[in-house]
Amino acid sequence: MIKVDIEKKLKAYGGQQVLKIAHEFPLGTITKIYGPSGAGKTTFLKIIAGLIQPEKGKIVVDDIIWLDTNSKISLSPQKRKVGFAFQNYALFPNMTVRQHLEYATDDAQWINRLLSMGKLETFTDYKPEYLSGGQQQRLAILRALSIKPKLLLMDEPFSALDPEMRSELISELKLLWEEMGATVLIVSHSLQELEGLTELELYINSA
Amino acid sequence: MDLTPIWLTLKLAGITTLVLLLIGLPLAYWLSKGRSFIKLILEAIITMPLVLPPSVLGFYLLMAFSPQHGIGGWLQKVFNVQLVFSFPGLVLASVIYSMPFMIGPIKSALQQLPVSLAQASYTLGKSERQTFIHVLLPNIRASVLTAAILTFAHTLGEFGVVLMIGGNIPGVTRVASIAVYDSVENMDYHSANAYSLTLFCITFIMVISVFVFNKYKAKSPLE
Image (cartoon, rainbow over all chains, first blue to last red; front, side):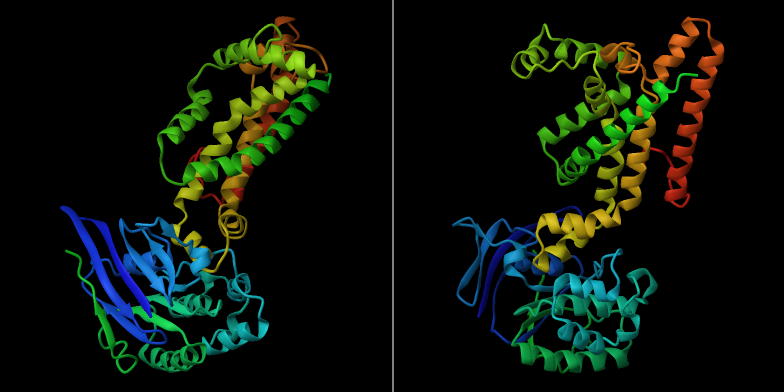
């Protein structure tokens, strides 16, 4: 079980908002996270990954404390090692497609499998600037998967994909996640986008 | 024309650039991350040579490193090192004087990179050092090159600081800019012109190469 109970002040137009979330995510499940723009969905994912610190809170993953502001415990992002697919992709402009994955893992077989799943085998020597939006987004997903994470956080991961590519990729990802036993949290503004992928949902709306 | 001042100038500029690359990269990285009062003060100190008359900086360095005073006295007593009127003293003064030209462009480039690049690297288990070497540094390559070239070119043109701390010792501290001044004082306009033209050509090529390396994107030498 992943237990999250956090509180974080967010800067907002005309004042401050408070992002307050207490939720439990069963291990090995996929949860869709949705809510209005500016509600703090990305911030929530970054807090779990250890990239942003909340003012108060506790995160326990499979009985290991990742964060406890009372005891001043906060594991670094490097130790939490979650897979993170960023909304803006955050691809490294200096690296080719293959180098992105090689930077994360030495497992050549795994890299080839990911490239094949993301249909990027013919683009391995391309740098991000020469890839289309959809290809960049797929690479961002593959890079997040390259470390074989037990927890995968995805921020609007399918927004640039056409419906056919999206549905094909989602089916393959679902099989892969089952194989990896990964827990997946997906932020999406579109309720239809993840239809059939998961029953679990978390609505976020900061006050 | 005696070429020694030209070689001495190039040697000084080369060593200063190397030293500043070693100091400047980690310092600019540290300064680019967040704000604090200490960083504010340090940045102001680093920027001072841009606005301070070089003779003022040279005067204080001369006072500080003179064997009769403070740090200079201590260096002389403990290590038997004298920095004033010596080449190492010129290097020290040049490092301080040219520091804003190295730190400014690198810090600015680091701040312009999306924060998510470093974050993505951290989530892959990479340390801050690995992230800096493999992700951040390669993506600010053009700015590092710009900073290095500007530092080199700026050091070539130093006069006030160099004269104050180094004096005019042929073969030791008599760099090209001082040789120009010296030649004019001796009414030797031919040598003054030769030194000036050489400095002009070298610095012009340096500045042109900054724009070429930046693919004509650079809007200002300090950007």
